[in-house]
Length: 142
Image 1 (tube, rainbow, N blue to C red):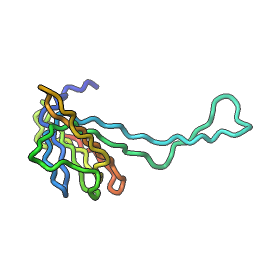
Image 2: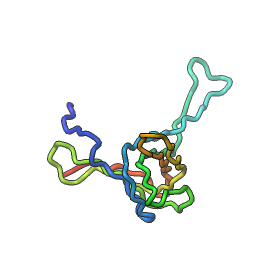
Image 3: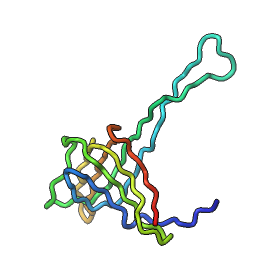
Image 4: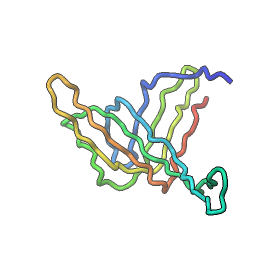
């Protein structure tokens, strides 16, 4: 099946439900979701190693590259977990409800901007999903 409703990232947003950080986001990248693989091999195993998939998975984290504004409080990794939502822009399909990825997470790392001549000040804000409310993706719809 061909996918034709693709779009650019312009218009995507990142929101924090409690702290309400206002961030001018340039990019958001995801570490991916990983399910642990448990080695079940034993001394009588022959040929290939045997494995078992874990019952749980690590939802990982996401890194947002944001523009630094010295007039806005810098997010810090000391705040309590909160609802974090990434909203995708509406694709060219004509739908009216954005796709979202939402769950409970916390800011786990902030890298302040590098100060250089003629360089836009940006910083990286890493948010880690804590698993208390599974990060869930909702597809774009009408």
